[in-house]
Picture (cartoon, rainbow, N blue to C red):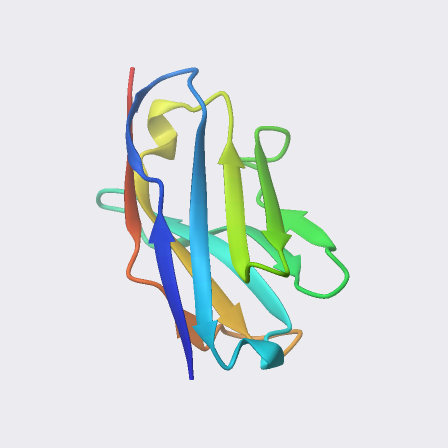
Amino acid sequence: QVRLVESGGGLVQAGDSLRLSCAASGRTSGIYRMGWFRQGPGKEREFVATIVWGSGTTSYADSVKGRFIISRDIVKNTLYLQMNSLKADDTAVYYCAGDPRPYGSYDYWGQGTQVTVSS
């Protein structure tokens, strides 16, 4: 089993930056990829970014491309999401997720961290 714990959320103003962290523990050696998802008020959960744990290959949703950066620290077993030029539309609960497979749904999820961007 893998446990994921997010941190770093908060209230910021439009244009500000924020960095989210996700600490992974447990059987982390089997993780192939990790990702960030978000769910805004009244919206469905959506994909934000993903990273292949070993190679560092990344992929982003069009809505955050060029503003957000996903990264990982293999030694610390920690996933990050650097969010720049934040907009009110970025307001959401952000979740990190992990999975041992290269495709398909994610098996492991964190509890989420709230990010609120005031305009």
